[in-house]
Image (cartoon, rainbow, N blue to C red; front, top):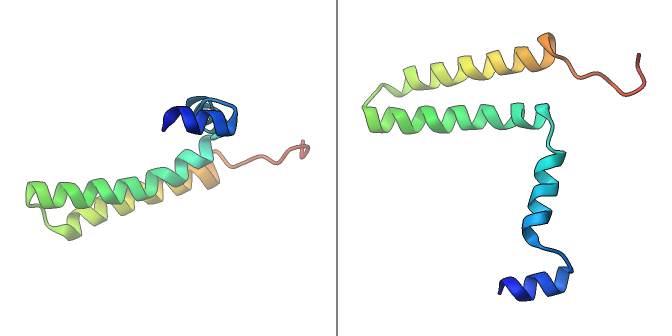
Amino acid sequence: MYETARKRSGRDPFDALVDVLAAVNRYDFVLGIIPIAFVVALSAASVLSLPIMHALLIAAIIGVITIVDACYLNPPVGRGST
């Protein structure tokens, strides 16, 4: 199956994955941190028998800190705006 996908596209799928990951910037990671924080918090709450409200509060605090950092402390700078 790997060989057929390679023959159809003309390039290695691993190279395509590397190209996509190389194009990811800081703000893409910021958008990924927020849902990951909630998934980890809910998983930890169920595994460690923590109250769900405490776990969600911690995830929400992480989300707020991430948004404040991305929007106010290190805001995106438009190309050619300087």
